[in-house]
Every structure is written in C-alpha cells, then in structure tokens.
Length: 310
Image 1 (cartoon, rainbow, N blue to C red):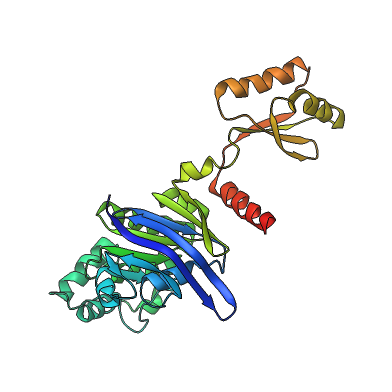
Image 2: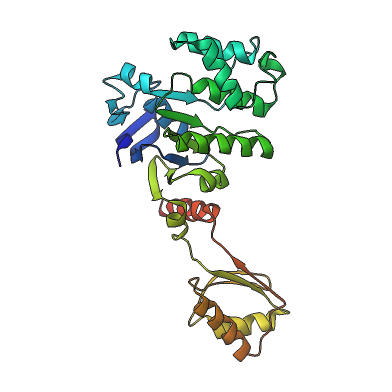
C-alpha cells in the first residue's frame, strides 16, 4: 500500500526543551492513523511540521509524496487541517463560511460546494444562521466540512472531539469513518484512547519525544497481560491460601485488599485451569470478573515503563 506520510528521525526543540527527539512512522493512504500522547508530548508539534506551519530542526518528512521542507506549497495543495479549536467565522453563517473557503481555494462553484457540504454534514436547516449560535458539535461539523473543500487527499485532525459531548463525539466519529471510506487519509491526534480504539487502523504512542509503540489496537493490547481474572475473597486467610495455590503456575499481576488479579493468557483451557486450582484448594471467591485489556492499559504500561527506565 502506498504511503501518504513518511517521517524519519524528526527532531524539534524550543530553546532547551527537546519536544521531538527522533520520531519515525509511516501512514498508509486511505487509512486512519491515530497519534496518542499526553498533554505536551509533541502531538501538535508533529502536525504543525507535517502541515508546513513549523520547521523541524532535523530529520525529514514527506506528505503526499512531497518533502515538507523543500516543497511546502505542493504539500499544502494536498492537505487540510482542522485544529483543536473550530476555525469558523462567528459573524458569518454556515453557508457563508463554506462559500468563503471555496472562493479562497478557487473551487469551480463555491455556492454548490457549500450546499453539498451543508447537506452532507446535516447543517442544511442551520445553513443561514450565524456560526456564533451553533452548539459545539455543530461548530465541529462545520469546521470539518470547511476542511474538505478542495477535496484534500490527506486531512489532519488535531483532537477533533476535544470538549464535545458524547452525542457530538459519536457524530464526529461517523464523519471520520466516512472520510476514510471515501479514500481520504486521516491523521488524528487524540487524548481519548477509546476514540483511537474505535477509529484507527494504526495507532502510534508518542512519549518523551519518540514513538514508543505502533500497531493496530489489537496488536498493542497484546503488549499487556491478557485474560486477566479478578477474584475477591472472604478474608485475608482465603486470600493467602489462593496466592499459595496459584503463584507457581499463574502470574499474579495485582493484589488489592482482599482481591487478586491473575493473568491466564486468555485461552479457555487456562481460565478453566485457574478455577480448578481454586476448587482443589477448597476456595470459593465471593466475586470474580474477567478483565479485557484496553488501550488505557497499554498506554499506562508503556509510559510507566519508560518513566522507570528514565
């Protein structure tokens, strides 16, 4: 599959603060790529470099087949950027906002383009209302619609659902899926790990200036113990008996008050063996539950490991 974005050894510092210390990744055409990281990790800096708003100190990057440093104008012809805050003109109506961007991008019929996008993003009823009257979700829909004028092949969405309510966030997810379905490459930054899990074909984790993990959601989830089962026991004596019965053959990942969390590997046979071992020890937990690894678990494991190494 052709690469829409390639990044190699990207570095950026602001005075003494090294933000990016050698970032490498690729984004395949027509896919959704999610970049995860804590506040201040450098996600927006990467977007700014890839969209030609900021120059890297070292390394190289191509977007749409063009070098961002050597051919910034060519890059800009292929991309669109939606930032963390909606870049709409509050004085103008939704229709006027769209027509303005159409005129600036020299589309052949900006009036018809505006009408088509209003319909696509369910904004026709509010088309002639000033954007200042819009809800957060409506403003985000309008902002993304404006980003699509000119049919960019690559769109950058910097925390697109930040501050939105659950319904508006779900609507935005649907729009992002439609973009990729129609062949647009989507580069997404987010702090919501559930969002990356729902949308992304590929996820990269940025921490301390580097990409520390990259893969599909399922591939990343395999980095943490799978098939976790949490047991709660009646008293401390039962808990200690359970530890003695399990610790030689199973990994006990957490002990909390009267509870144990045990990694089984996830297979039915292993989980059944865990319960058989407890039965043979004449133990009956007061409660138990199976825990499926999430991207939150992956993120915390990866970043905590890096902090310990540091």
